[in-house]
Image (cartoon, rainbow, N blue to C red; front, side, top):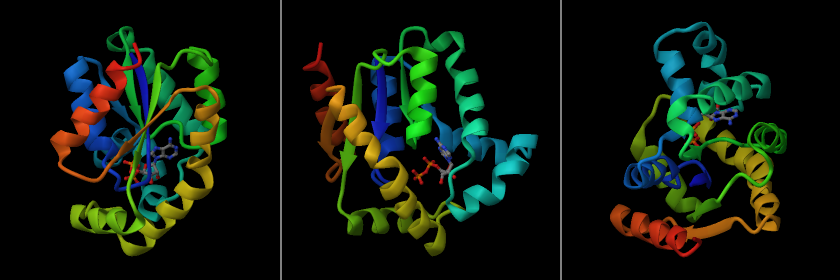
Amino acid sequence: MRILFLGAPGVGKGTQAERVGEVMSIPHISTGEMFRHHVGSKTALGLRVEEILARGDLVPDVLTVEMILERLGDPDTTDGFILDGFPRNVAQVHALDEAIGDRALDAVVVLEASNEVLQERILARGRTDDTPESVSNRLDVYERETAPLIDVYRERRLVVKVDGVGEIEEITAKILTALAGLS
Ligand code: ADP
């Protein structure tokens, strides 16, 4: 299956995408993780995006798209993949459509939680880009740039909404049940 995870920062996308990928034996591809890896390893890309990540802004599309399309060309993606953190704006949806076709996705899992839950979880997590300014900027960027994608994929009848509040195992089970119901 080719699945995309959408949801606000702190909603648990990464955790759930990783778990679902493991159960389905398909790679979990997180652009955030890829960028953090570049920053940690001080690659040319990492040095270029370090400050952008710290501010909580989006990395320019050209850089993001190049990185992700290269990853999607790897042989472990032929049986499917879980995309987490990409696409994050309409231009990235178009780039993905061009690369894999606009009917290539099987589902878009949208995880939901209230703003209070999101703030609480992000602060508890304490990643280096989790400063109050960056968090509030990322929530704004999500509302402005990424949340509209839910409608784009709803029109394609791909959206599966799942409540992101509860036990981690329970949420994974709900996602798996919802995905199993599709085929
Ligand atoms: P979260 O969703 O919890 O904020 P992520 O790990 O998904 O964290 O992303 C961390 C950061 O990586 C983002 O704030 C952004 O700077 C960058 N990033 C990740 N994915 C993209 C993308 N598709 N386009 C542009 N920037 C991205």
